Image 1 (cartoon, one colour):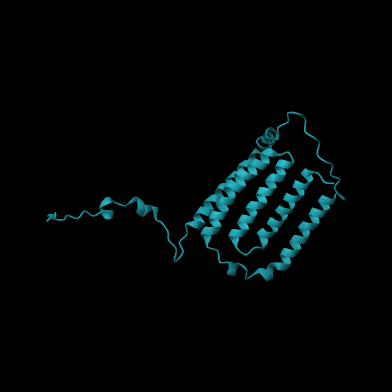
Image 2 (cartoon, helix red, strand yellow):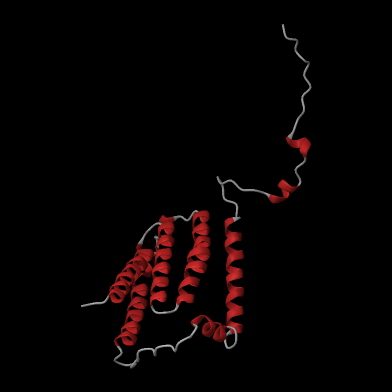
Length: 199
């Protein structure tokens, strides 16, 4: 007889695995981003269930609420040619299968515990705050990798914005320099007309 917590864990784990598979198998890139949002959300639920509430909330607020919205915006603005992207699929299929088998083997080695005898994590003491512990490790021992990751994300955001601003034939675009140079007399014309007498 499984408990309610086990039922929730297996349910959301199945949803996360299915949505992750759909993310890499759907043809529409917008649908792929939406499936990735669902994957992140179900992963956040699992984090909360495992007692890492801060990581779960951050996953929803930062990734689902900000990063994935940016991904969806970029994917919709790039006007990706899906047919052209699928031209080399068969050529790269053997390499992709080899990489997938290697990753599957690594996961089975770790998860089955035959090589690595993984003990269950100890229960935290009363008054333990995983947010404080995570911040202590992140901003002391890993402060430089944290700053490098922030810089990489900043460069990625700038590159995404630059890609959306590229000019393509048949699409509308704005020129901020022309908008700044606009004058009122170029947009407004006052016409003098003689007043008409009412009969």
